[in-house]
Image (cartoon, rainbow, N blue to C red; front, side, top):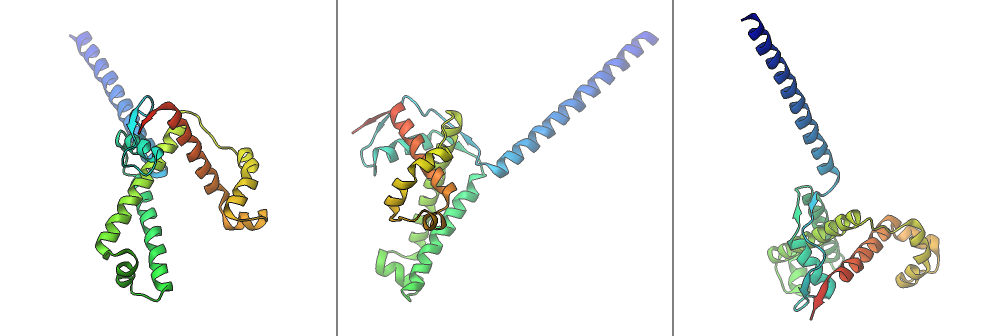
Length: 203
């Protein structure tokens, strides 16, 4: 009887230890996920290679392909901040322009865009969401496929970029443009080209 009680007690102790260990692992996993969510837009890529995509009605073949890949991708809530930031930045640009022309914002929209504030804000929100999702997809593909755009590549492209932006002085160019943003822009182009090569675009 005593032996049976001893065995049962031992099992309970082992079970308790296992439960505690599992709880610690779960808590640790949640903390890691929360930390990742706070610093990255969490992206679960769907199929992004071997697709057949129609470019009909799209602004460009690249845009048509990215829209399809975005539709196949799931996004975490962390992306909301990027969407909000893009929306706020774009709205500020247009409001500053209205102020420059000394126009009430509603009057400015009616004069230059033949729309009202509600419809305009809806359009900017939709555009901001599209852009943020496409950028998130491009970053995720770059990470998964180990695609990079290095400092050396940027240095090699500087003369071309300066000419494209109308600069001849590198110092002035570096003051006007954030090189980190330029690197990301070129990385996105590189990833987009990779995706175009991995998929079939139909007219």
